Amino acid sequence: MDIRHRNNVKVTGRDGGPVLVLAHGFGCDQNMWRLVVPALAERYRLVLFDYVGSGGSDLSAWSEERYSSLHGYAQDVVEVCEELDLREAVFVGHSVSAMVGVLATQAAPERIGALVMVTPSPCYIDDEGYRGGFSTEDIDELLASLEANYLGWSSAMAPVIMGNPERPELGQELTNSFCATDPDIARVFARTTFLTDSRDDLKGVSVPTLVLECEQDAIAPREVGAYVHAAIPSSRLVTLDATGHCPQLSAPEATSEAILAFLESV
Image: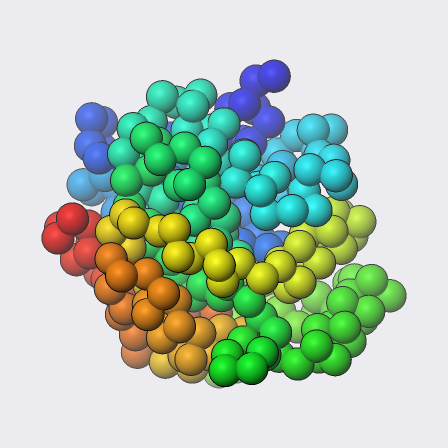
C-alpha cells in the first residue's frame, strides 16, 4: 500500500533540518497545524499527515477493528515514519494524539526521539485520586448524543472544545472539521478517544517530553497536565496563557514559541 497516499502525507519546511511529525486529534486533520507551521518550518523539516479516516486520507483503508484501539493510530504513525525512513524524529501530538505518540514511541523507539504533547489526556474519566474532567455518566451521555445526531453534536460541542467564545470563527472552524468526518468513523474514533485509559503507558516514556497545557481547558483540565508531567520523569510542563483545547489555533505564536524553546534544549 502507498502509505504516503493512504495518510495524505505532506513534507515541508527546512531541507535537511531535524524532523517534526505533527499529528492531529479527534475530528481534525493536518490543516489544524497551519498557523504554527510557518514558525516551525524555518528551522525544522515538517511531516504532516492524516490518520486513516480523517481529512484527505484514503477512506477505503479504514477498518473498525484496527481503529477501535489507539494502537491502530500508532501503527499509522510507525508506518509513516518507516515509509520516510525517519530516525529520532520529534512527535508533536495534539489531544488524543499525544497518547498515540506514546504508543508509537514504544512500538518503534528508533523512529521517535522526543515527544511534544499538546493538551494531552491519558484518561478523560475521573477515578479515585485522579481528575480526568468527566464522570462515567458524562462520557456515556456524550457518546450517546454523538451517535444519535453527529452533526448536531458537532455544532454543540466544537465551540466548547475550542473555547474562546469571543472568537466564534474558531469554534466554527472546528465544527466544520468535525462535520467533514464520516459519522460512522467519528463514532469509532470518539469511543476510542474517550474510553481509553492510557495512564499505565506513561510509565514507559523515557524520551525528552514537553507537556503543553492551556490555562483553561474544558476537555483536559490542568490536573491532567500535572498528572502527565508527574508520570513522565523526563518531561517539562509548560502552561500557556491561553484558553481552550486547541492552542495551535487559538494561540499559535505562544504554542510555536513553547515548542521551539523545548526543541532547542533537547
